[in-house]
Length: 592
Image (cartoon, one colour):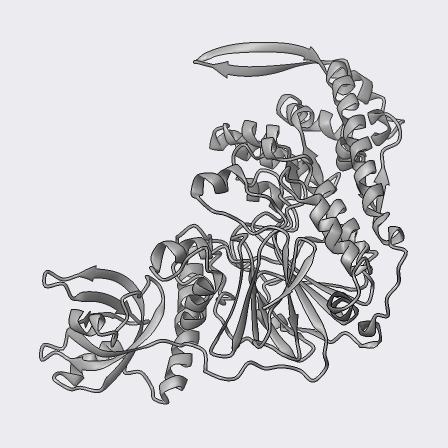
């Protein structure tokens, strides 16, 4: 439901979200259509709070257009509107966001609005005037505005509060960033959720990964529809996408695979699984190859070997220049659990508030920062989220994180990818942040915005940056994958050359005609986040980094038994990849 409103550039306050969520599908559809019609006249980003939700529900379209055609909705609500690329602060009364020549504003303000609350099948009608709502909202807005101004002012003082200046070696080193746009969904989404979309999506996944497996064994897979011709023969090579997994009465694993034409049952003998000759962690929808023999009936395939598209073993790649990259994710600005003091301390570090020695050597050569999603906590991401927020407006949350990033020295290049809490569609692949959000970052020339996932060549090293929503699914499916050991999850994705192998889990996937979640290119660095736990490792030459969080443990995490590692920032020496791991841990540099 939230995505329907985001698609027409309408943000919902928590109160509006809950009200709309309780409506019937027909009521929501009618509301959406009315707002769409209104946006033909006033094409601005609308923040739909209780007041304006009542306006759209209780007044006809003609009256709404006549009165609110020049309304700046965001400026009305938060005092931080976006106009011509600049953030405006609401100085006067709420009425100033309307055209002063609009005579009918007063008429609607003086109308009586009814708010109906249903309790145990009884309707309680509470009547109040819009003037009273305006007065109450105005007082709230003034308080919110003052709090925002204070936070922004404190953030903007960071750089000037550092008296000491260091010699930034990285300042004289040119940034080298190349985004592999062919594997970034931004601006290229075509899916509408039709059956044809799903067919094209899975066909693309199958063919891409099948090609990887065939190149790995240097032979073509035998078509499943012609497998009957190989009755009784061994050393037959096939590739398929897994459609079903079960166990036979005798305890053998039965895997149903299919290609574009047909399907076949593959038997993995239990003794071979026990000896480690065949895997016991095959997942639904992953593309996998088998070498084995065909039964005399031609309808059963007995596997002797399982071939995955896995990455190629190699030595971790490094560069000649001694520069560093810091890895962040899950900052969650807006959350009451956001560690503001710790994040400020990290920004101070970048500005030179350091002790001499190893800290100065690292900071002086820090050239890049990679952020793998969840810059903000968002609004309406989960039920009851408003109780966990100190800032209930998405745009204000982004304005705050943008101000933090403005305090980072300009020679440090920042790469930003979204996550499931950001203001983009929840389904992966996710495009880069929308233009109206990006306007808040206009003053920053040292930022590259990308989708999720994306591939970026950073100073000669290929980074795969993925937020990590699918990690929740992998942990529940693969016994060896654990939240406490993020590389154990990341390895499983590299093995399968896919960032979300199973369709229909906790990670929603949009059926694009190209599967952007395929790991198209073997990365030098695989950067992820999402699970709020730091972790490092190397798998067959790929350096894996999960960058933790700047959010304290939430109530949800307590219930799930997840213990985050907040305030820890991984930093890699790009000239010694896989050899040494550096971490800024709540104010202290550690090397391991």
